[in-house]
Length: 553
Image (cartoon, rainbow, N blue to C red; front, side):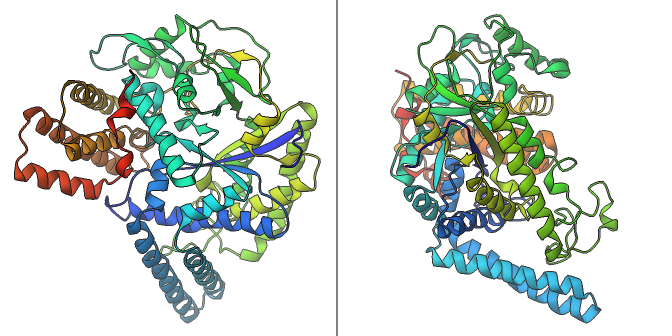
């Protein structure tokens, strides 16, 4: 391993999609996965491989959620993805003919770009044996990237109603990682960068009595996790939620409980240093890194950041019926009807200038602060939402290797500069308002009532009786799927509200029926068929689904 400098830069990419296989295709469902794989995951691997061919390790940290890995490794994905790529090539070829016939020669040029793009992705996918997970593993084994884990199904850990369920989300996430990557993960991406310390907790909805909860970091510690990531406002220990407390009574209840046991201090802590997190009354510590807001704004913001450049591909406007994109941003506030045609060659100048600007920003921040600049992003931003993103990422990493501040993997940096200061973090997330509002509000409170009901009944079953193994495993699978934070996020943001509400209801109805079967203690042929069909549809984590992961004793 090369010498790690104290002044360093870390890109952290969080890759996640909920379980969508066997639950619809378009407009919501498996096509999300196909788009992410073709437009983001394969291009990311190609960026890392291209840098390696030039003697440059990417040295990025890549989070792959366990539920995403399950899908990428699934045989249904592998075969259906090939069909998807072939259909995209065929539809682009049709667009070439259509646009040439109609005299839209620039669009025909872009259509040929899409033919080449998807042909390249299909050839690459076949070249790695259709094994994206195996290719990510090879990149890590070669020292080019570090892969970190997350909660099993991306459950929103601070709001889960039982410690047993937090434990299962974390430990299955670690076990699934070990199964796929043949090593234990050093780090974890907390779903939604959400955190809750230890305190006496009462659920924000329902009538469950309050009880002493362990801090989220205690479960990370017990699972052997060495570090996690938080948003900057948690490090400051302030009150970032502002008016959001007034928006939903359950938020105010949680905040008052937490506040009664947390001492707010005006601490001068640097987001460019790792620290150890610990709850009051606990000796279990885990290191954490803090997100840098300045580098985040440059990439996340469509109004202020690079993706809003007028030359870049417009995400929201597509050609019917192929679904391919032929227009550019033009103006981020312009109506879709006013978008100009995309020119692939016009993006070269902006990409070069913006990658220069970003590298300069990183070096300036490193010069001003003694430590590591940590820039976490959703992986799907690069390529899917921002088509030119992978090319920008390649240029940034290449230029960083020639600058004073080098890219570094978080685990390597932690090995070189282990923290000593122990910090008590406040409760919160990276969601709007800094607290839990995106996941807990008037539109989603009903989902938490169902989750808490299912959790209590499942734990009671686990503790009270021995039941059919297949039945028990499917109960636990449906509980994990019910707990996914994606359902509340999609409901609140309206991005796919109907789909999320239907999916959540399907999983609750499934676990409710399974629990009733378990409570009746009498498996009928109809019950066995229901369990078998559900196990084929929601086939997550295989033999890893074991009651031991829900056992706190």
